[in-house]
Length: 164
Image 1 (tube, rainbow, N blue to C red):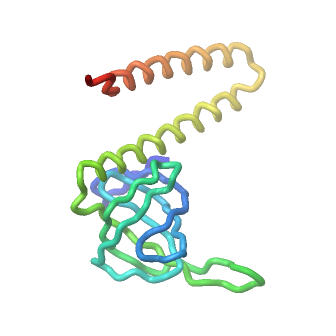
Image 2 (cartoon, rainbow, N blue to C red):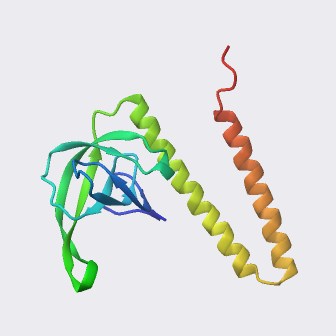
């Protein structure tokens, strides 16, 4: 889902995915949202503001490593764990810093994949809402076909092809 906030410089996409990184050792963090400028994560160990880490984006988002800086970190609540125990959970805002062209490309690939998943889920929801009404289904099929043809054409303009 695309989120816009009055205090953010850029829109963020919601991406509930787990990943490793941030000096967390074997601990995982939950990637909550992502934008070209940064990300928001949830984790079980506190992070110190203005410290830099490398994170590995989830495999489903390309699995690339990018450098981040912790802009803010705070307690977000409690998470249930085994046998009625609860752990304190934290959320942190991360900014992408000193990114190389490869890291910038990795972030953009992740955002494109997320946007594609979101678009596909919306098309599935439209299909579900269409139910058994043949008129609605025909119109939806036509719109999906037009949208996918447009997207294919746009993607083709970005492919490098054989550069020999």
